[in-house]
Image 1 (tube, rainbow, N blue to C red):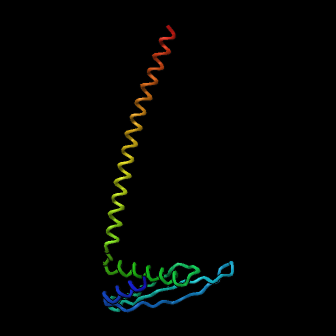
Image 2: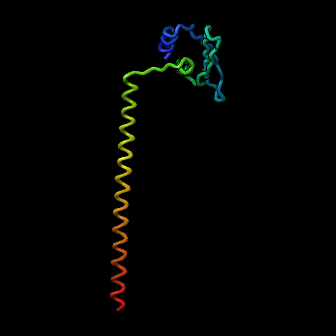
Image 3: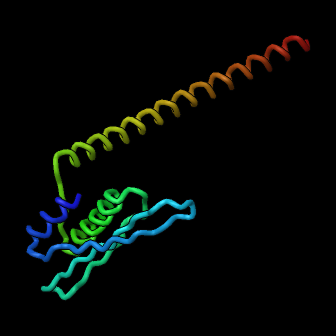
Length: 134
C-alpha cells in the first residue's frame, strides 16, 4: 500500500509522506503500534494528516496509515484508482444484487401461490364442514 501511495505522490507532483511511529503498551502487557502519516501539499498550502489503526503488527499499522493517507489524498485531488480487479469486483457485486433480487422475486411469487392454495384448502375444509352439518 505504501508503494501505491508513493506512486500517487509522484504522479500528482506532491511531496512524499512522512510516517511517525508510536509504540503503546496494551493493558495485557503487549506492545501496540500506530502510525501517524502526514503529507504537505505545498501548492495548495494544505497538510494532510491521518492516523492508522492501533495493532500488534507494526507493518499492518503502517500499511493502514498509508491506505488512509492515500484515500484522503485521492479524495482531495479528485482522483481515483481504477483497475481491472476493481471493475471486476463491481461487476460481480452487480450480478450478485441482480441474483438476490431475482431470488427474492421468485420467493415472493412462490409465497403468493402457497397463500392462494392455503385459502383454497381452507374453503374446501369449510365446505366439507358445511356438508357434514347437513
